[in-house]
Image (cartoon, rainbow, N blue to C red):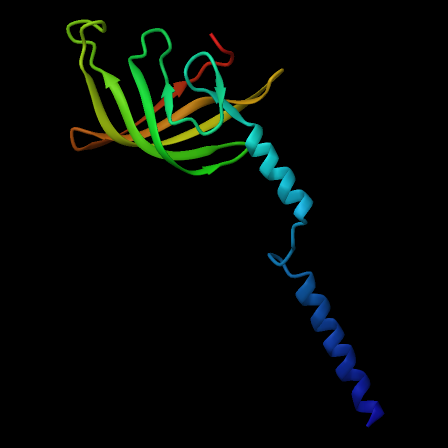
Length: 149
């Protein structure tokens, strides 16, 4: 009986070792999860051309004339390197001029990305937008300010 138990115990021990070291089963510590969350919480965007914000609902994309702006109704994620949201994109058609143009609004998804590290912390400097205009899906990339204006 003792002779049969040893191989069974060795097999159980090996199986346990394999399960613990299996890919995808690695556990993250609460400290590393907090660190990742705090890094994401520090990444900001200059949303109104003057102030750094986290998860802003209104983002002026073109600070010179405010001819393009985003209204973000909800965020799916806000991480240290990218943030995803959805809402509406507002574009000025600048006809007959930008001062007298009409704003048009489109459902859109937004992706904040391209992080630059500044003296005030990490900052998103790019906004990717996907929207539908005239029945056609369009993609646009906008540069965001790197410092308050």
